[in-house]
Length: 225
Length: 182
Image (tube, rainbow over all chains, first blue to last red; front, side, top):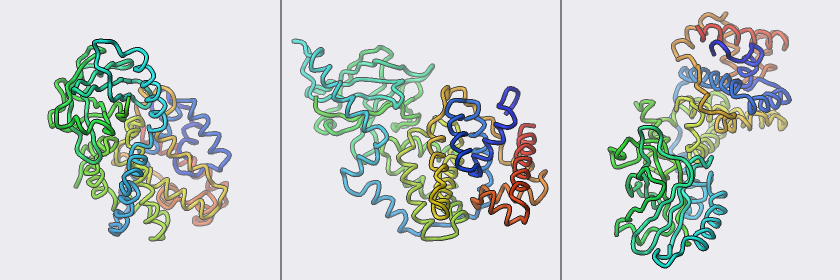
């Protein structure tokens, strides 16, 4: 912490909190203060980062194989559970958002010239800083409308098709325009329903490796329109 | 030996449901995290359960990792150490729930996350700065972090009154921060 960091008392409290030493009432008060104070949060994270260095003196110990099996069973065991767990952090809001999207598409987007979307998805960041609505027609056309956010400066947005455990397949780099249309490769079309679409941050022109290399910025599940 | 960049790229792939990345991450980091948890809990069966909880948390929270600005290994170690501490405190006193919220504070930054450039010093500075503390003071900070000891337990271990221990600890934090900021 340099210059204008938090005062000494806050700095100490952040350290005590990071060590887990504050009594319950003081810990709660600290947590409240930290939620409202980015500097205090940074002071806490600095301690967290530094104290984690102490773990270097801890001898690694290989856990028994059964632990990994249990983790895999918990995360990937039954198919329904896997999806619920794997994407648990966004699924709640997504269901509501998808219903809304379906309503919007139902009302506004069906014109005589546009094939009726069979499937839709809202590909959204958790903080909704990036939102892309996707609608898919049986002929393979995937229409995208970006309603919030954009690629970072000097970077590109790349769209990925993810089905179950398979490696993500690129559907292409999104143009800078708000609206775009991509064609879903024929072999993926039968599997669009239930797939997940994700947008990652990539260098201009897209991922050089064929797999996502940057942050995953937004995710959305494909469902019936 | 996996590099920080490897670990970071595996974490980045978890939100895409990439099980291969998860497998690689587990293989590269589980021994360290298990060691950290065992050091706190000193009980293999409980440590195995906590390790399982930790990797489930990592899988579920991976999309939020970037927001906190920690190095990938620090993030993983902190989740493991906090989960072990939660287990320890629950075992000791049902009332000590405050550390439950530690995970949230890692994943859920206060307003203005872009401003949160963490001014943390590196590992070498940490070792050097611990070296500047009197030996028993440094041991107390280590005991709190690595063994999950409370003020009362630290006071007992070092055979000093509780208030003295708290004063020691707080002075040590001031010295460490001064040194780490140099």
